[in-house]
Length: 554
Image (cartoon, rainbow, N blue to C red; front, side, top):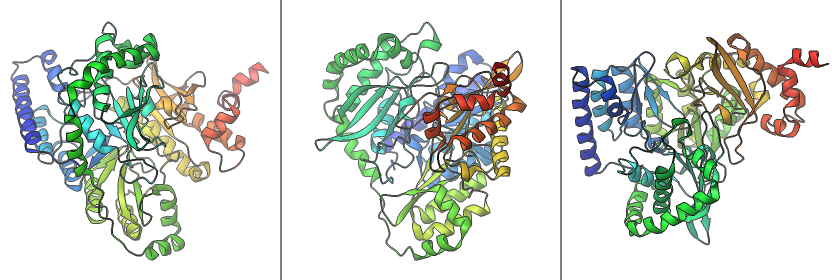
């Protein structure tokens, strides 16, 4: 992973000192809240429903044990003992005191972390496939390119006050695990005639106007990628709408102008940006690549793993659900679920963070990843160590075997924390997970992704959930709309709305009826919910959801 240079360290120290002075001026009244707001947002500090919230960047979801331990320290010393991992591969602290935030930022800088550009109308934290560098199906590790994008975009003088926020995601595989088609720019690494480059998707996004991105270019060689992205962002920065923040995202610009016109403008601008780089970016990329060399994988027998897998059904269930193939056959990728049934999706205690840091240091070549699905990954683990890791995870309620199942829910903080939310998300997620654990159905149901948002900003990615739930305010009462058939993978799709929404106490039974309809409609246990929905359409699910309407129609 990338290690800070002397320049990085000095830059961050200067930036933190500047913000410390700004906080002091806010506390003594020299700055009003309106004057302070743009300054705090540039440093990842929000004012939420009950308190300030600090959002810390975890670039492309990669961190080491020392960094994870420092995140635990922040949670314990300056918050309420836990942190919340988000769909942007960040971590949020929901209860810091304003006068403590400079100390938190200084503590982060000690381990090469910060909160810069986790807010504001800038290029946000660049996210990546959480299996990057380990997955058996990737063309190349996308993280060196993500780091190049991070360095390019951080404090970029042209891109600090854009029409709206801007999000980039990158994957090295055809199997999209980074939701690239729902981003302002999505990049997929591809190889053509021995040359590595990227397929560029533009204009994706969720929120009040969800859209799937369109292909801007099927191939841009890496020699040209930064110049091409600079052209793309600068075109939008110039023609994007500033008269209406709800129409300011690049997805609206692409929609209003058309992808062909945008492509033409980008290509024209690219002729200007291309000569400006002069190869310096490629020299920097080569330097960055040296930070991402794969670990020296250890050899060893996997007999102990095979024995445990055969003889321990609990361990076998966890392996079958939470383990993914690694490019090295003797190794595995572990996804640690931080979604125990009834827990808050994405929350991890300081103690749990330290346990995961210890496991990474002892068994996983000192690497961890945060997924956009709000779980934690140990990307490189020898299979012989899996039984010991599983045993340790069980001690700390981190061994739930539910990755990709109905209780592996993405949920935003909702009205429990967020000033923008119009309904609760966390209790709904907890109740759904608890209910299906009681029914002992989720392994029979199989692969099914539920995503929940507490407002139309869609921080819970509900539009691309197989079952999406959107909480809204209807005359002061929480009302939950349901969408079906959303997908955040390479076959990305926006879900279809089922019809009228449901009250808070009706939403869990409604989900239960959807699942019952799926189990009745599927052709075999191997046919997933999404496959069934795409085969049979909305009608049987709508019939199950609204039986009274069906009876009246009859």
